[in-house]
Length: 377
Image (tube, rainbow, N blue to C red; front, side, top):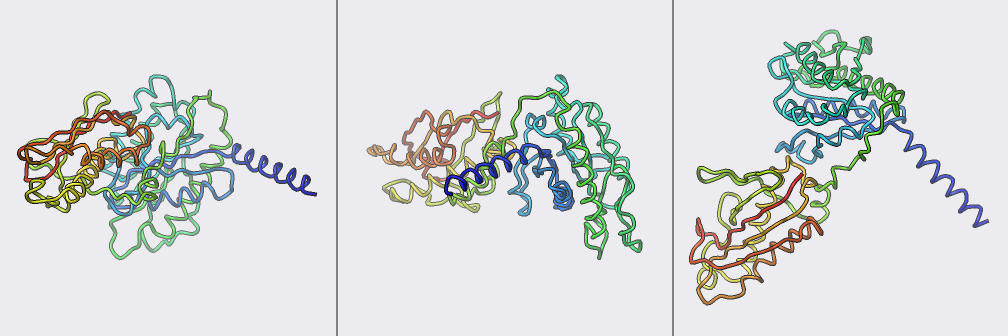
C-alpha cells in the first residue's frame, strides 16, 4: 500500500511539473511613478493567470523610492527573451512613453541586432494624467516594439458593457489606460480594472497559442537573479536611502563593469558615533558606525545596479579607513564588520580583497570611511 501511495504521489508531482512547464510565462514589465500603472499591472496579471494557462511575473524597469513600489523586482534587458509574452506598462509623458521605460528600451539594442524579441507577443497599457495624448502614447509604444518584430496584440473592443458611462474611462482598442488625475474618482476605476483583467486574459491565450513557435533563446527566467529584497528581509537587513553628496561629486561612478563607491557613517542625516577611537568613541561604537557605513555602500550599490543587487557579480575590493590614535593596531577587527556583512548578503560573490588603515582624521568627523569596488553586469 505504501508503494502504491508513493507511486501515485510521484505521478501527481510529475503531472504538476508538466502542467507548469506547459504554461505560458508572461512578464508584466512596468515603469510606475505614483502607482497607477502598477495597479493596472496587477489586474493585467490577474487576467493572465485567470484561466490557469499562464504564469505572470511583475517587474519594473528601474528601482523606485515609492514605498508601494520599492519591493517590486527590477528586470534586465537580457531576460526579456526568456518569456513567452511581455505586457508593457508605462505612464503617459506628453503623448509618449515615460523616460524610465524609454531608457530601459534603449538597453535592448543588442537584442534587436540578434532578433532576440522577434515573434514574441506583446501588449501595452498606460496610466494617463488627463487622458489627453493617450492614443499617441500607445502608438509610440507600439512603434518601439514593432522595431523588434514583436507580435502586437491589441485589446480590441471588449468589456464596454460593464463600464460606468457617467464618468470618463481610459478604454482604447490599442490597450487599456487609466485617467489617473481626475478628482473625486478612484483610479483605476472598477471598469478600467476589469478591462485590464480582460486584456491580460486575452493576451495569455495568444501567448500560449504562440508558445514554442519562436526559435529557443537559451535564456532561463531568473527570479530577479535572486530576489535580494527577500534575502535582505529574511536577514533583517534594511538598506537606508542613498546619502546625498555633500559636494561636487556623485554617490558612485561606474567605469565599464566596475562600480566605485565611498561612504562614511551617515545615518538619518547625521554622523553616527563621530570622533576618534580611544578619545571620543570606543571600539563597539566604531563597529556600529562601520555597519552603518557598509549599509550606505550597499544602498548606493543597489542604485548603481539599477535597483537589482542580483546584478552584482563580485565584491572586488573593500578599503576601511578608521579615525584612530597612532598606536592603534586592531583595524582589521573593526573592518571585519563590513566584510562579514558583505558576505552575508552576497555569499561567495561577497568575498573580496581588502585594505585597512588608520588616519589622523576622517571627513565630517566620521570614525570610519569605506571605499568599495564592485563588479556588476
